Length: 172
Image (tube, rainbow, N blue to C red; front, side, top):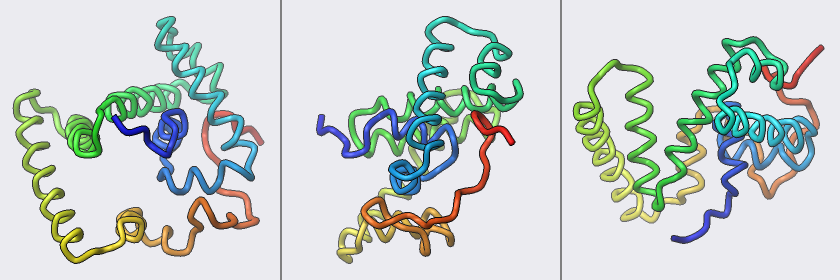
């Protein structure tokens, strides 16, 4: 298995706090909340899984409400499942499978069928992009949405303004 240039801890933090990997890597070097507090929260989430903490205890450690702690834990577990796959195709397929489980109450066989179908559709579009020699970074940014066009890549300097507030570890 080829090691990802984005460490697992960074992928977990980005997923838990709803950032793209590119956004997280751009913010991490210059913002305390992303370089220290987010990784600390990931360690707390892992400890909560290892020690089977209650949501209330986890919420105390994350400095947030129990419902937000539960959502963070759900995203953490989903990210771990997705990132456990050895290949990009496996991670994409697992991401689709997990996402379907979040939006629809379906049995595993139906979820797997739908995720395989959607993965094939995404694979077909990636095939076309590869045939056209499209830039994968540009494609990724387009898929992130409109705000990604104006935001920096990890190699660029991030904007001077603070990012919007986030739930855990952020107090007024």
